[in-house]
Length: 239
Length: 206
Image (cartoon, rainbow over all chains, first blue to last red):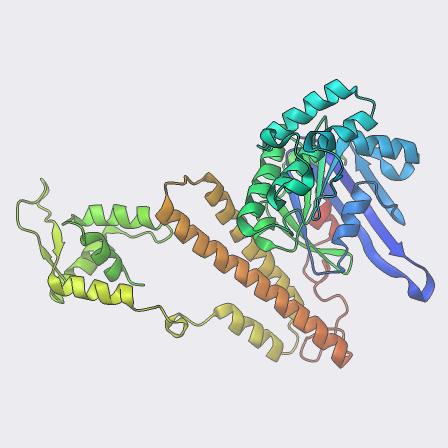
C-alpha cells in the first residue's frame, strides 16, 4: 500500500484579526491506497473545509497537501486543476450533476475536459455506469432519476478514469437508510477492489462505521480516532 | 431475555437433545450469546422441575442422552413470553450514563475526554458489527436481526454521546467556563493533549 493523500499540519483561517475564524488548526491526516477514512464532527468542526482543501478546491493558510507525492500548495493553478481532473473524484450530498446532460455524458465530461476523445470517454463512462449498476440509465437525464440513482451516477463520475482518491462529502445525506448503505457499499468496494483511497465526511455514525478508520474533528483539531492503525510500512514510509 | 425462554422456543417444533439446543441457540443469535453445554443442561433441569419440559419418549442417543420435549405448560409460558413486551425498566441500569453523571459530579474529571474515549470505543464496536454485517448472507435473517439490533444500539449510544458533548459545550458557553471539571477548568479538555494522544498519532499515520 502507498499513501495517496498526505495532509501535514494543515491550517485554514478565514478572515483576519479579531474576525479570524480558525477552520482547521494543524491537522495531520494520511490515507493509504485501498483505505477508506471517515471524518466525523459537529457542524462547524472543519470537516468540509478539510475535504475541500484535500481536493484542491480551497487553498490552506498553512501546511502541505500531498497527493501521490505532489504538494498541491506548491503547484500552479493549472497543475492543481489537471491533478484534480485526473486523480481526484468528488461525491457531494446534492450530487452536483449537470441536468442538461444525460447520465453517460455527465460521467464522460471530466474525461473530455481532460482531452480524452469523445468516443473513448463514452466507453469509459459506460464502464463506470456498469460498475455502479446503472448501465440501463446511460441515456436518461438526472432529473428523471431517483435520489439513489443520481448518487450512483455521481459516484460513476467520481471513479471514471484513473482516479486514485475519492472524496465524499455527506454522500448519503439526501438518501434513505437502505439507499445510503448501498452507496456506502459502492464506495467501500471501490476502495477494496481498486485500491483507491477514500475520505468520507459524514455526521452519521452508522455510515462512518463502513470506514477502516474514523477520525474526529472538533473546532478544527483532530481529537480522536477509531479503527486500526495502518500497517507498519505506511507508518514508516514518509519518515 | 432468558436462556429458559430461548430453549423453550427451540423446543416448540420438536424434541431435541441438549447439544442440539446449544448449537441452534448460537446459530439463531449469531454466537453473540455463547452457551456452554453445562448451562443448557442446568436450564433444562430447571425447566423440567417447573413442568415446562419433560424427557421425550423413545431411545436416547448412543451416549445415553435423552431428548427433551416441551409440555403444555411450557407452551403457555412461551406464548406469554412472546406476548409480553420487554420493558426498558426491566433492563440493567446503564453503566455509561451513571459514569458520565458521576464524572460531572466529581471534581477533577475531564468529562469531555471521557465522552471522546467512549465514542472511540463504541465506534470501534460499530465498525466490527458493520464488518460482520457485510460478511453475512441474506439468508441469515435471525443473525442479521440480532446484528442490526446491536448496530442500532451502538449508533444510538454515539448519538447520545454527541448530544452530551453538545450539551456540555452549551453549558460551558452560558456559564462562561472553559470546561466541566467540577472546579478545575482546563482549556485543553478533550483535545489530543488531554486525551493522551498527539495530532500525529491521531491523523498522520505515516
